Image (cartoon, rainbow, N blue to C red; front, side, top):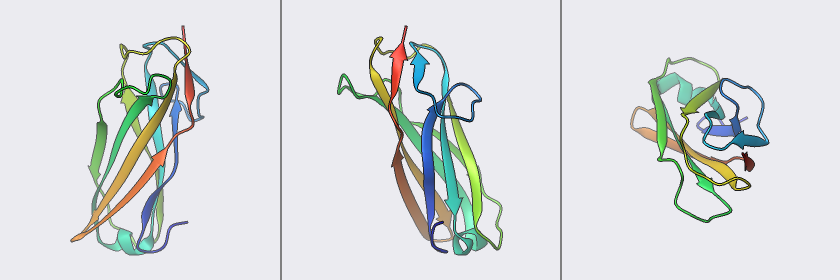
Length: 132
């Protein structure tokens, strides 16, 4: 659990479209989701204005530029008086480029805006293999 003044990514993983469990493989060029389980401390929740997830996927085998651009999801957040957990999901459409056998991993940054205060968290997912 984060401190009262923190917000963080608790888990980051790649899953099948609309899936809830981490994937071990993704089909070449097929859609998948990047999922971030986040937790926001109570002090941040009292004054939160918005949060945003930035995510991309890198090809570990090729040490190349990301096969996908940085994708984002943001929202106006509802204030509360206690800590808060949620799941943020970014859908990756079909047609991305990688080769069979490549290893991919998601990387993400999570940002909360609470008045003038900003809080950032980062995470890297486990690797998934690209299949034919």
